[in-house]
Amino acid sequence: MQASKILQMQSRVAERLLTELPRGWSAYKLHYENVTLKGEQLEKYISECQASGEPIDFSPSLDAIDLLVELQDEMAQSSSGRWAAVDCRLSPDGTFSFNFTYGIPPMAAQSLPYL
Image (cartoon, rainbow, N blue to C red; front, side, top):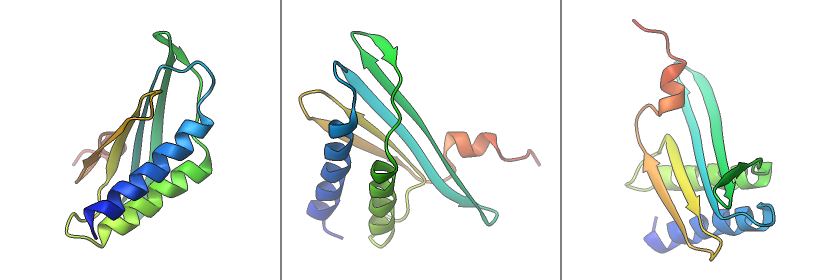
């Protein structure tokens, strides 16, 4: 997969979230995990939205989550491999960043029994 296609798909996720975020937001972070462990799919997210430094309730739509799944599937076909978690940060000016985690992500790790 070309880096330009990855960036284009990230832009689609960011654009979707930007249209959904509530009026007056000042910072947004989405931590999303989607991994299969021992044959069981674990999918979780944490949505952190702020307005003037105060937390406000916001959950991304299923459409936004579906775009993340599409990004994950496309990247799995590239040399990058399948990521297990992503942190997406957005600013009101439209800038965004994506950081990917490979291996067992933190929330999924908490659900694993100790050996």
